[in-house]
Image: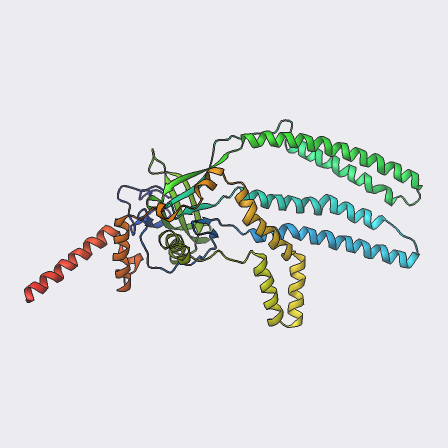
Length: 437
């Protein structure tokens, strides 16, 4: 993995010559515990503590973290704000009509303009930002039929700046469009103007707005397509399961008046020409070493014992789970708390949020994966399944018996030392037996 005096990271996580399961290393910022290569059983219960498991089939398992539900809720909150603002404008309009007997479009003009300039753009921006985040955080896939791991990484590409487009150009484009939108709604505030005059101003403003949007939209369409060609490309590195590097690292970050401890589970593929660096890596914050072992056991159990031994993906982000939760809340909660919950559900559009999140998990996240990965993930006939090595099977059997006797993985030390100590004890026992005889 990393040398004793170097701090490991997702780009520096390769095995040393003496690296082995159970070994501990002191690093610059903390310590780490090796779990693999040679992924031996740790004796811990498999628990998906941090909801890293995203998808599970008979043949493969996807690891992908991220709170997709929160991002969707935050984006759809702007839809609720849009509706509330329009209802507010309607209430003002009705009140004015009841008092004066005249219909005025000023509230709709002001509120509609604010929605068009603030609420709608921000809601759409957050929604597409969530889609982009899903596409740019591809899953790690483990194939138990092939006993291989597919690790994503971004390759190639270079920074591409759009021509004639910078922060100043963005500001002027936004101000121009905003001014034109204001011009569209401004005639509704001219109470003394004739109907023909208002319609003329509105038509001219709409025409100018259409031209502006057409010019800006066309420019961005072609410019972003050019930028996309220069962006890094997603590739997957295929690596044998039994050679995958894995470890739990506990770091202490000390700042002015604050000390925080972070524990991270990392999976990595070493570079062929530089064994002290990682070609591709994935990490997740597990909070504690014991939680990291439980998270690691989810992965190991799936690869060694099948999908039944591995926890299923969390259902918190599915629509079916949300409906069941609502039915349970209606039965268990009194009227007032239940109504408060329904108001919160509506404000964050949680029903629609779960639909969008489920689509992102099942469709959007898989849509951007390379075709090579899909072909690699195809199920194999059982007679073609890769088999675990005899050395790993023998080691796991020995460890299982040792765990049954009370041994703890975190206390055993490197496997070679533990095995050597075990053989020595067996010889001593056999020697004492012969002496007594």
